[in-house]
Length: 299
Length: 254
Picture 1 (cartoon, rainbow over the protein chains, first blue to last red):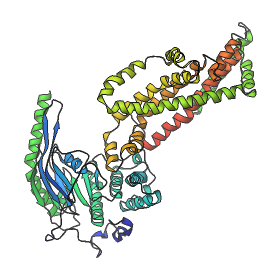
Picture 2 (picture 1 turned 180 degrees about the vertical axis):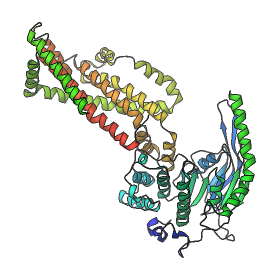
Picture 3 (picture 1 turned 30 degrees about the horizontal axis):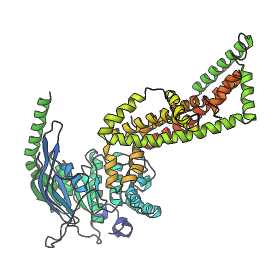
Picture 4 (picture 1 turned 60 degrees about the vertical axis):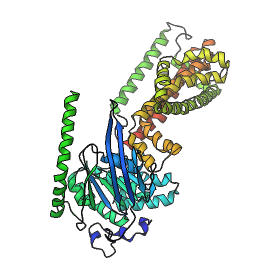
């Protein structure tokens, strides 16, 4: 694992990130038979709801993720997207099936797999830099070293000047970046992101898409990114996984080999998004109907 | 703010003026109503012969120990109750009902158990304040967003580290009102407990004043007790609350 300090790419600016000769091609050659970084085998998960009915949230999910791959997961609300990330993070246990990281079964949370929650879960009692270095502190990394490493990650997300701020003093986009830096600081193999940009305004989101793409390329992390925004998935992912509405099953997989860096407005991105959306629409309707029925019965 | 300060100065000046006036009229003898001058002299004499200093030191040491134990015990108990449905249904209910019992009611029991000793006083102090801390910690743990614990675990915090670096700071906004209430109860319980025997504390100084018909000393010690309570509240808890607000933003645990 390389620390960002040794990474020549980090000094580069966000605009010229794409054309540098230093750039490592991220899309692994299709021929190379790399062992999967992460594999899910027959993952199911059910919940017991308040009236003692079992609710199947995820059903027999199989997935192989290559090292350094950027996988987006889309689906209607209630398809178990977030549950899937919690299972991979080890914060919840599957009812059936196994999650394997580098071929070893996952049992419990680990700093090798960091989940960025939808609500971020930044610690309001700590400053920005204390948040970022939290994982290193828990790992017993001495203070000078963890400060140094955390500062590099803060610089990577362009928040170098805000290290002593408290979380409530930051804007939504800045908080997102702190969460990203905090997740990156433990140098996880796999980064799990749960609709991280859902609550942001459009400009901030565009900017963070660019930054995430750049950071992903510079750090070589494997990313699983959950969103309900199909455009976002098409703009970011090497591959987009479409989940069905309750129980969540993999309905279709889209491989997206559009050149990077991409933009949300690219015609190709828009066209891919439309293809995905056509498939997604049925599931969204199912989810709407279920909500409607629920409204009626609960009245 | 200046307007508020001016009002307060005026209010206390009028209060003092009334006191001086009524004392001058000599309707009651000084052992019923002391003069401000007498109280001032009692204060000066108490500090000059070190008896007040000793009483303050003894009382502060007791409350530091008693309240300290209360906070530790309350945090542990509160966490245990919040973490177990069984404890919540059983012990949780008992503690809430015990809260309606004034802490001084424990004194006869404490004297029978421990005799007229330091332990009896500490027992009353602890019983007076532990419930507030426990209940605040319990609600804090339950109302704290689950995401902090999850994020902490994901970032490698386990067991004691998770508790010290995540659960405890995350519950502090909920806990602080309980800590404050616990302190107030502890302080009252302490003074009451000290009145019963030769305990060297501020409570005993009050009773000594009564035994000697020295109303000036009684009032002087009362002022001292108010001042210390006010100072601790201002220095300790206001600071804590202000720091929480700075860190968490405007409304911690709104």
